Length: 417
Image (cartoon, rainbow, N blue to C red):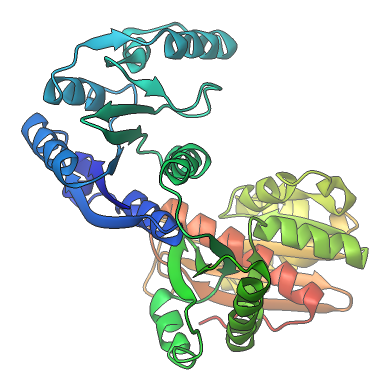
């Protein structure tokens, strides 16, 4: 069954934002046996959206449109679609009630910009009656049109929980079995080169790479009605990949890195404490996002200033004056200090330059040191991360969690610079 993806937003056509939604949707649809014949990106412009939409209606059985469903002034998808399909905009009572409940729970006023999210083309059906994400469906000339938000998390939620199950119920395909292998520490080009070693061993299993920054998720998909043989074939290819990638693989399926770390710490009977500078509490936030983390998480100290590093963690002033806050000795002393202060088995520390300023030729933006104190040993390493401030913080926090995972498992840390 053929379909089409249309992504809307000036930020996409200008290059300011990567079109991750199109890539994710195409990968998920293809893995489920639903073919994507075309992907189109257009700006927040009526003629372009109308042209793309009407062309898709004439050539595809289903169309997935993302973007422009929010409350800001440039979120005009509902208005544009209503005009393009010659349908009046109508107030959807169910959506309006969800918005009213949301503003009441949040203690804010119901503004016209929020109310406009409840106005949809006549005949629209909201996709999430529980209000988890805004989105609606229309049927035009027998073609199903799904309009999803541009926020990646919301788009993926509706696509996976609502849209794909509905499409498969309408157009059953041969059963497709999938599994996900999660990897950290390798780039997509690296993976492509590595996979050349087994490209003649994957048989009919379809292998795909999908970036979930800073992770890469490898999907294995195989059609077949015989559950035993399909599972066996997926296991075979999974084993081949595992032998290639080893400890770069940190999880499978829906399990997250922080969940894996928590399980390992609990099974080993170890407790961890974190000292964070450039990550500003992100590591502790991710650890405590897992239910039951109090079993193994002692706590964290956010020590952003040099004074805080000295007073709270016992970092030596000589160390800071001679080596700087972003240095190997400082990371080591931070890890030792937090382990001692919070009486934990492991102490993990991160200090770096998240940018966009404060970098130097010797220590450019993205320079990050990680330290780990465990038993009678202290480990440290320097890394260089790329991207904006948020991306550098995310990579730093992920690397710190991966250090804990690798230490408990007895695997080597990822090499630094």
